[in-house]
Image (cartoon, rainbow, N blue to C red; front, side, top):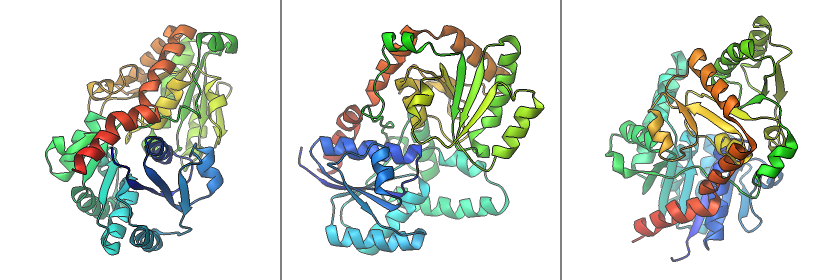
Length: 373
């Protein structure tokens, strides 16, 4: 396959799933022979390297705050360096990338990815709903004029196609990418030595659409019948105070631990057996793959598009059609009872399907070759 000059762009280098997924794409594309530049609107090189960006990937930080400044800086880079492909992911980043491509006269191909925009639109109210409406109009234009629109699961790809008003086959499925080097496998022997406690883990920004409160309510039901279980919550956000108050009201202060922001999450995974996140806006985030890689059973939300859509991509992810506290509690109880070192090692092995090399060779490179004809 002919080598391409590829710019992978994101607006910031904060520690998040979208950033880690794009870094995985950049690493995999570089390993397969392309000349790759990771372009960030803001952030630090230390953050990029901590999230696993390989040394062979060129890193450029625009040091531009705000959408307009980033559009100008990205347009200048595209005009000077003239890459073959601009790859971006997530709503606002895609909009910035598409406007910059237009302003710069970019003649290459745009590859734009997203998750579940229709769910995001329904979650808004008041002024935020108006703001989201305007953003949706811009997103429709950006995705519709791209050479390729993609999403992480067949379900979210169908939803993105509906959002854009185009045939579902025009939105491709490209799963999230797991940086295997950052998350070494969990073997049976290693898991036996760790002697993990009966702990659940939730890793998320503590925002309303992550529904961490739902996890706490479900955990309360589990804890009533199992005095040994505990819940760890890693992350910060605007809901933290109300979530702590919920824990106190439910009498769970001695069973629930708030860890705050955790830069190196791998050791936290090693303290738990089951990962739980039933976010309203994500179906197959990076954290599920990371948890599986470290031997955790992973429970997610399959309600929006149906669990079959996720299970076609990752059969071992427990994608629940019922994410009520009672339904979630039942799934958490089953997952904890069924966990074993052998099961954890099997989950870790399955995550290899989402390594940088596997996703780039199986999805991205064939797509690049097809669109470049």
